[in-house]
Image (cartoon, rainbow over all chains, first blue to last red; front, side):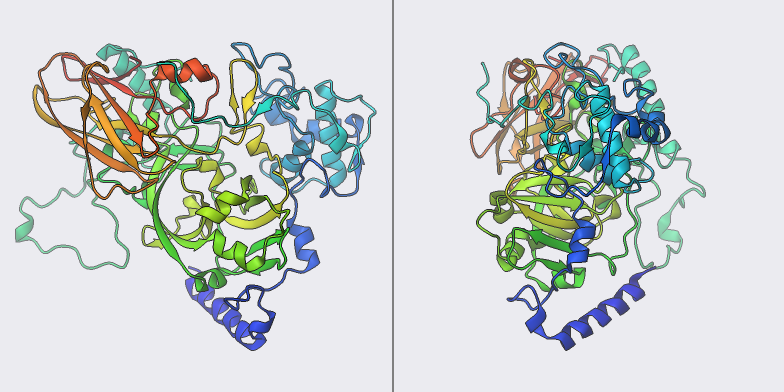
Length: 183
Length: 420
């Protein structure tokens, strides 16, 4: 069990905090916490928003991404992204208003930056955060290409990815609840 | 989901078998725990015939329940056991608090094994004083304890088109209620100094999915909790040990577990969980986004699907009600499919955004009965019928299904899940 060790480390930390004194604490009222180093923030800040500000250097195309997809994604998502058994990633455009909606990257996802964010942080399922930036850009480009959103040779990088217009970009509405029900 | 419970006892039993067949249960034989009370497990050795004549067991450092208790979480059929969810056995619950060991689970990439001594929380972005905090740091800050339910917005998602799950564990078991202890996020935001442009907070988990959700800053300043305690002890690993968000009244996915990072930004990050998932598709093809609030809901837990009443006579109808908007004001119960309603008694104290126990005496005459409960919360919102809800949402919005639940009691006493 880690309890004794946790207590020991806690004691060391408490001692350090006492030696450092409250002047260095980031929470002024309580005298605790320390500022993060720029390296720490860089290592942790993997979230990529729609403006792409956090995107790393690197690039990829559908051509460079296909071998990565085939090796690391196809087993769960199918040879062309349509077969499963896990989430279907390709197709479904025009299906959302039917009785059999198919929610995929191409038919549903409003932002292309989300593909980069999610693939890097959570995929491949058993090896998250293992792909290089070039591999993630390549897989992202390949998925956009399979969905008919970009061309096979189009370069996806920190500059172009935020500019990709997703088909369902304007398909989302705010929460109107509480609702008035017809009674 | 292909498993549909029919009205007939035979159909119900056969679908029940297939339901059980696709459950993964920790204890194997404990699947029988779903079938109702009064099963004698094959206990070995048997309990003493007269416990007053035998010395009991010695004291022990950490307690466990009686070996005769069999209530367990059950897993929905998913391709893996790590991107998965389990349901709380509401039919076995007593009172309002969910035992930590039975709190429903939803993991996107398994339960991480986190050493609390090495765990850190980073708060950064549009703040004047970005900070790294240890758990010891967080425990130095003023603490609060709050009793709140957490409900997955997918609770009931199988029940839109047809009655699918055979019992209340399957229809409603993605809600649980605990006492949570920790630091108000408002306390930390005040300390780090949010820039005027900071309108959203991105919360990130320390699991293998590094799961992220964006939350509006106003909610974060209102009542969001960074919890390290659950029901009087540390969080369970399945509930986010050593640190999680509790976002009172909002969908369970926002209560980010294994919390490692909070980044203040000007806009939502549009993460996968708030775009591809946890958005509600409408019949016209548009989808609602950021549908955070879990609306008023109730369900009768006794009698409920899969149970069998031994015969006509006097019973106590029991159930749970809750609302993400505040306290439950009333729960009404019908035994005739919604024609007549009678107010149930609410167990005091009725706490806001918490499971509320209701009870009502009932004399069953031995004929077919259709049991329903309808909750009204302190805002005046009335739990809708499924027809009312689907008239607005259609049948494919998946999330936020809070319709009135119907249980049919047949003349033979068998209780089944029906749409009425």
